[in-house]
Length: 402
Ligand code: ARG
Image (cartoon, rainbow, N blue to C red; front, side, top):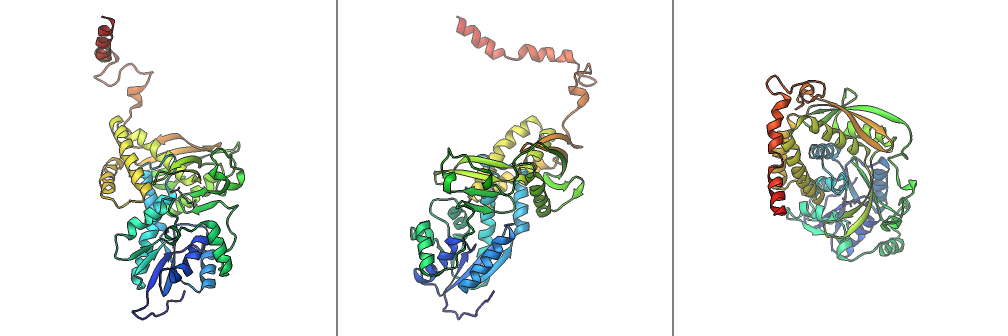
């Protein structure tokens, strides 16, 4: 990392930098097409595999790019655990890429500010969601926002040619040409032959999950106020717990999804995801809520969770609506303390036991084996309710028959 000492006339732009083709091509383009004197590459750690940092470092060095790496893993993990409290998923996708973007964008903005940049750039295309998520954060600053790939209408073919012409350091590392986005919460796989919705993906696209087999394993996840806090009785911090569960549940093939996803712009895309830890934690959390929340809370929270997920997908995690939804969620989570046993089997993470001191449940009251409900409510008391039930339907039926 070399932070040269530019004079105040030097125009510097901070670039969201991964070392992949898009962002590598952006480096010379920001100088040539946008007139910046210096590009500052910023890579934000949200739990990508180590090779990605090695690739970013190596590419930055070869480009002689000033490069900063910022660790936002814990902050990202905390946001993922807020997502657990909101049972968050969008069309079956637990939002790994989506939730990481505002965290990454904020970290880059901070680097840009401390390193005298006046512009911010990303390598996202004009077709996806990430451009919107990044810019929603950046456009709340005075910086110039630049999206070279979108603005110059670049295609992958053009980028490859341009990189070859200029001898830019782009390594293959493209995993069968699919576009991969990995962080602590999920691994997103799209593009190439997966773009054909009828194409059945081979095992080769999966890296976090083994093909589901016959073996099973029971694990216990502990929750406090809706936050996952332990695994099999051992207290763990969010990053550690998530990493551990990705390994553990991934081995049982848990957390694969293959969906048709409606992007914000309206384009549909075929997406494949791997998210073992997210699946375990989301399933376990909901199972515990089922035990401790009242029927009305469960029903209403589904609507709140849905709205949280929509905003999460949009990357608008700081929206006023989010604060309001989270106030409701916070109130409900005061009782979501307890433990859930989850069985990992055949690619599923199935809750098979739950316990909490806040259970809104009385075995004695509900049991088929006891005569009365409580001391002063007996079975026969339901007769009045049974007489009323369906009253309007019977009236409607009578008028139909007239
Ligand atoms: N469609 C997902 C989203 O917008 C994930 C995109 C992941 N990107 C990738 N290169 N695979 O959140």
